[in-house]
Length: 329
Image 1 (tube, one colour):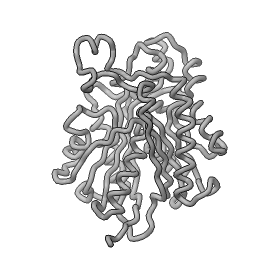
Image 2 (cartoon, one colour; image 1 turned 180 degrees about the vertical axis):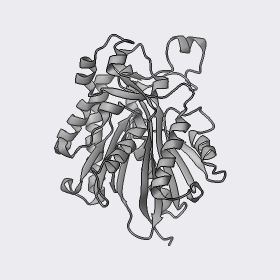
Image 3 (cartoon, one colour; image 1 turned 135 degrees about the vertical axis):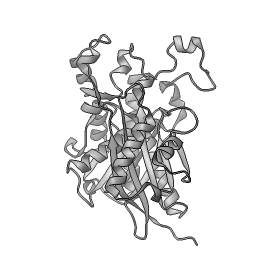
């Protein structure tokens, strides 16, 4: 029987574009107000990438941060995974562009598309590769430029999204490892509630699809809210169950930063105090697959987490997809 390796988390990293778009700035673009946005979402500002700044650029800078913290060289990476719904282009993958920027011409690389749950799906995938012994050291990235698929005339969606990237380096361990459990799920019956209608084979790009703004995010907010709360709480409970841990064992819960009301409702449904929930949505907005990893990196760098603490990451996204991971930092 092949030996089953543990999964060690060597480091995390993150990167955000320099440009900040505040609620006051949005008041000049669409009919909205800082009070309206803050009360309904908890968001006060978000980061926006420049026109010539691509998802792979954000991924690259987040990766450099993680590599520096781990004190390893890019050559030690033998697999690159990038979770994103805003790739540089449909193909080659953003992971391939990241590979090129890192100078890794032999490491296999591919993208994962699971919307806001992408990073949790990525941890699950990386864990399977490492435990099987197929790969030893994996660079996992969540990177998004949602500003580039946003309809800036739609006040119901344009206030929500931002850009950013986070990275995690995972490696094989002779010990039990740091990824204690993961749980992922999906239900395509909800696919028409959160999606981008054009750009694929159903609605290939035409003048008509562009004029109809079909290449931007569409969402039925109220229905998404209900499903998000239910599925995130369920995923959190399943991952906790699989890990053999109790709520009291978790130092910090890091949910997908989609909407402050969703975060509060999930915490209530799980049965935890908001004091044990990490929130940074007020300054990042929703950055899809990058939210849980960038929040985790911030919690580590600001001292809210210490070496050995147990954390639960929880996410929900278009598909619908959902997932949770219990990890040791």
